[in-house]
Picture (cartoon, rainbow, N blue to C red):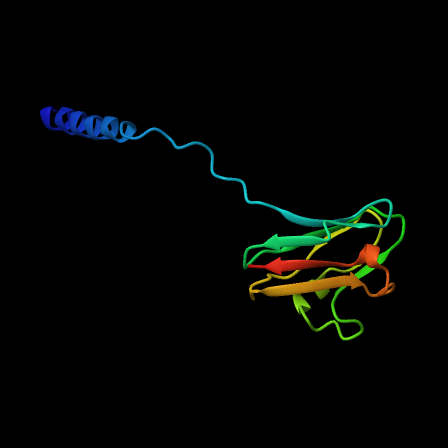
Length: 126
């Protein structure tokens, strides 16, 4: 019986030691979400977005028209293939790029309206 009491005292003493120590440093940081929005006016904002390597960028279409977001240059779309994953965005849809890991500048545009500067922008990975 004494052995059981001794074990219980040792265990409770070691557990009490676990609760001491440093104060919690606060909640874990919330990851930053990088996004490009096509506004209800059909204008992309921001037109330039700087992101760290490994980022995915969310594209949201708040315009009443469907847009097909693609990498520059038109029509090859091969500057940043990760941007091509956004593709067709109907009204209200959100889709993200692939992981942008290479340091570079990725131009993008609406494939169906490639000369419309209101639907053009760039993502700078650095």
